[in-house]
Length: 333
Ligand code: TXA
Ligand code: MG
Image 1: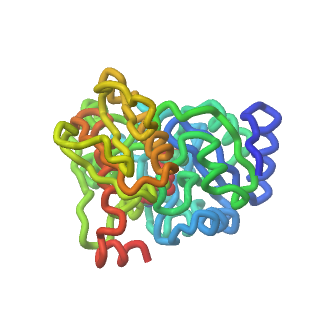
Image 2: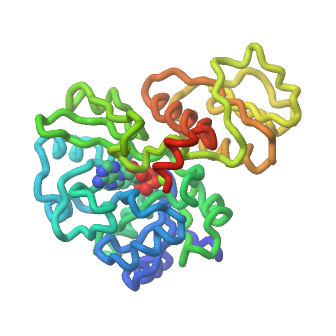
Image 3: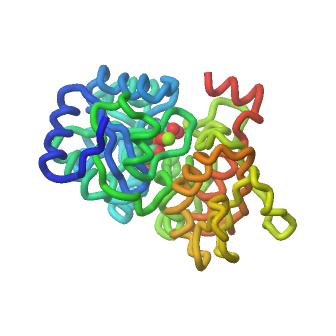
């Protein structure tokens, strides 16, 4: 497998692959996706196979034109329309009642479908060129960290995909925020992500959260140990008490606190403590440290503001890998 630059010819070629039932990795502003024709169940099943993803975990359907909303969903609450108009194209997924047009394999049998319009120009061009909605999870093996570059996709998925389109480094760097509007119009946060919860609340009112554990999660991808590197991750309050001379450990700081002095094991998410920069760097830092074969990665907590909510969500899940015995095993199947 080779990486194809995201030019017009390659986008057209990728669209032909998708229209022919194939699967293509493509850039979005959040993370790289692995796309198939959302209206072709057989093509969609190839995504689950390639990722080793359980069939109870539904996919997000990507559109490039808001008119697809009413074809994919028969009930778009006014609050959802307001959010779509404000944040699309962008890192927001809306969970809505689905129409019969959406195959059951896409939604894992749920009567709702997650829909989003990405803002990356290559993603938009690709979806338009396909002329069909594109179902796409993140382009990583199930449970692993999402890819934020074409190189990550190549390393993780290799020949399990038909084509890899390159669109550079993802500018947001964490997956989309997932919102469901409940019966009374209240927005429910199913997954924190690339659109800050405060900005959504400003427009749609206070967010309810449904991230509890125990019973089957309402957003099935919210399994406790998703987004995990192979190396164990430990989240710590701050690094003041740690000995960073441990050669078997990697360290992820929120802000820059000094120099790495050439070890390659120390990473700063953001020089100045800028939350957007930190989110954009999170997965690439974890990918890089994970490749070093360390025995542990320590990650410093970040403030729970803006994209910090999504960063802490991913770090908490990464740190749970292998520790959730009964509950985790039950969900992952
Ligand atoms: O930014 C993103 O959202 C990226 C890019 C590629 O768009 N996609 C992504 O997809 O993160 P994935 O499959 O890795 O995570 C999507 C999650 C699922 O695990 C599931 O929890 C949730 O979206 N989801 C999808 N459809 C849903 C539905 N009908 N109801 C509740 N949750 C749903
Ligand atoms: Mg994913």
